[in-house]
Image (cartoon, rainbow, N blue to C red; front, side):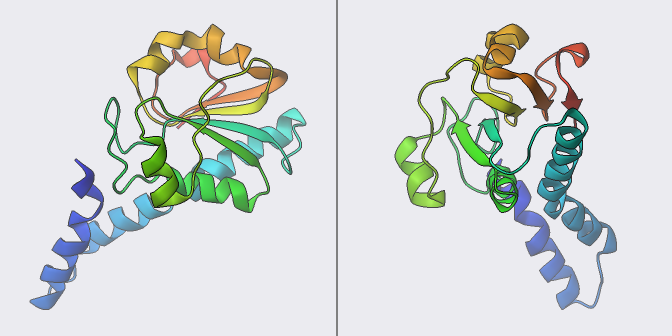
Length: 167
């Protein structure tokens, strides 16, 4: 559940309080904490290769909740990806049929998009494995994109040959 992201901090605190340095736990934390930067760096590299202008790029992030098919926004790391994209001057829309619109606004100041329009996005990032996204399929998702685009599948929602980039 949502506590997976915070439990290592508690475990580290307790271990250090008895004089033990939990290096593997700390290394895992550092890796998890750096994933948003890694994901965005990979996307930016592919955008440059395809000639997609980064500044002002229209990006659709599909999924905000902590896990699939669940409305829980506690401890979601997807907001870190949104922040990184914003730091690169990208224009990000977030679509999540499971997330509560008011909760997303209050917690993260994110206004969820309610409708998906064809031929709109330079990039689509599949960030949460909701069944709705699996049901949409690659053709529907590609139809949301401009002619030159990238589909980055972080959760293996699509088949390998249906996405342009995978985590």
